[in-house]
Length: 366
Image (cartoon, rainbow, N blue to C red):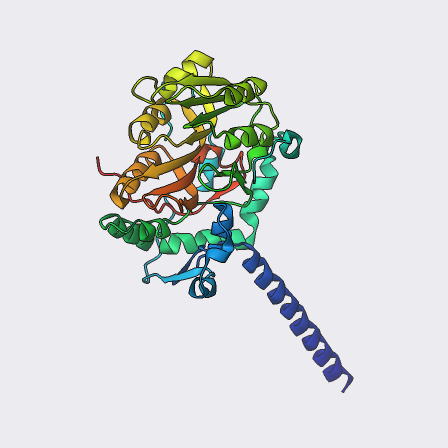
């Protein structure tokens, strides 16, 4: 009788222990934020947050839109499991290729508000990130749906519905420390873990129009230790020039790339690589960007692409050809034909503590 009682007690304790583990894993799974189920992809389109990011009042939503301010569910067709095209070893490849080699929050006048110190990445942090069960599941699910995601995106690129295309662009890398840098609305960009920049890094901002909230904010967010280079087709007003002088930055007035290429800007300023590149030059991106990423090392790109879905896909394919992956997509609510994409070089993922998911941009046929 005593033995049966002991066995019963042990069984109850074991069941209780398993229940606690299940509950813990459930909440860890929920907190990952961007989990994709094999049959259902969550597209984060919370309209209230989107409106606030663009400086528009949330009250502009009608009752129907308010009721729809939840993540949209897009049913994906079942697809066979595909193997990852790249392994975590990709993250550990050496950085710092020389020129000539190929790459395979609100703004504030109180600059102290954004002052942060640069820190080097601890390899153990990246390893521990990979070991998290929620991250493993995130990667597994991304790989399961990757082939179908590529098909859906390619099909959307053949149509003229830009908003449908944007929502079919699936993030290819997971950054837990995304930060919105710059003004609300047009001009703000999502940057991954800006405090992880290396010392004496280079920041390039193309397309200013005397709106340099991004420039001032990123300069502070990276610890005031990076060289910032800005360019616009027109000469900037005195307050903009003064702000750049205060940041020890350099300004160029020229049409990019017709009158001045990005590599020429780097040569004139004595820089050999770029940590962060912001590019918003009204369709100039189609000819300006590739000569840079082909021959210079760039870590993160924040680009606004203009045009029809086919134009967007073509530009994304060109960037992806040089081993960049999308970690954020942000629709431009003021320009239906425009969308902001944040992308990271695979060689920089370990530095910024980013986890690769699956490649969802169809390969460029050239």
